[in-house]
Image (cartoon, rainbow, N blue to C red):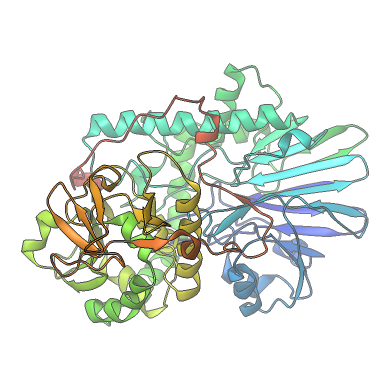
Length: 572
């Protein structure tokens, strides 16, 4: 088996009878020109990888599904290996690009074709991918490759057996804690912890898989735009959450792992006769020099100079004041909010969106399911506040982008502040901006609400007239814990929050004031069998980081923050 590294998460796998192209992202940016492959992969021989037997796209992120590259450069006779996702979004996107031949896999169930054995472990969650994430195991005779890329499986790895070569991510893709306006000291402390957690998670996967050789891959990208350049890890910021390959290899060696090797675009691994032989397109000394702070600065400067015309054309192509944002989002989002009782109850607050040109903005009220014009009086009432460049929001509206959590937030061209801890329901809503997606997310969390027990969850169970009901945990008036303060009066058939006296009928309609409905549904109606379709994928109710914490040992809570960013780190 021969594996050519294409940069980032891209691999071209060749066996005796077939070839597999995995996650090609070559020579162009992602996320509104923010991300670029690092090191640059402009030199990859595109013709050599354009006619694979199989195409594997792990998930829907644009640094894995590069639509422009797939449309222009990959022949449409390739058979697509589809991970076991509950929604058909990945297949739909690939069909729109011209692909017609598909093999639908089941999570962890091998498929044997053309003399090779293919297994795709799949995880699903509204927070992943979106909808899901996956890895690829390729076996030919005694040879086994595990392309884990971004995926974070929580079980099944112990049964892998002997693995020759393991590609995996070690550096995450979130803007936290860079873009939340934390004071610098807090930002560095939180960033250092996130950096350490990401590398420690990868180390545990290396321990568990036990491959003869592992290669760090799938990031981090680099940031060429001068307004984002400070996000690159150039060796002077311990709180930077994008450590490069050299930093990860050094970290692993401190824990006794010497079987890791850095790869660059064009690096080739040949597996056979019980060993892995790696050949690089440039000398090892040049690879080492490239990943020094000085070498990286030179590479980024040359890279930016080459790509500057592309970046300028992209910025000029974005719409500007072509959209009346508030009525457009009201028309689009209010029907989704009305279908999202559980998600809105989980958010239980308001989100403001305004623009860095200082002009108008809007408020999304998840309590009364409305979108309205921003007013100064809204400011103290807003729990979540995002500031974006207007052209990016207009583009999301014009293109009807269904996943703002990736398409927009991964551009890192925003500022954000929130009151209280991270709210998974808010980001789930922003990733599910279509009827199909919001329906899936709503069913997912209804199922979760029914499954969870104990205090502190987003929902709890309450007996009403002899029938088990699912009720939101927090009061929509003042966020009181309704598990403690909600009482039901059978004579009046009303629910009362005894902390402040607010009342609802048994259907959740507010009797005290407009716009404060309570999520309350009979449990047998809230739980919809087959909520996750027929997928056999692992349902992730926690992140893979948390699965490694011992019982009773929780990560430290995150602090509140204001909307403050140093002047030299403003985003445009």
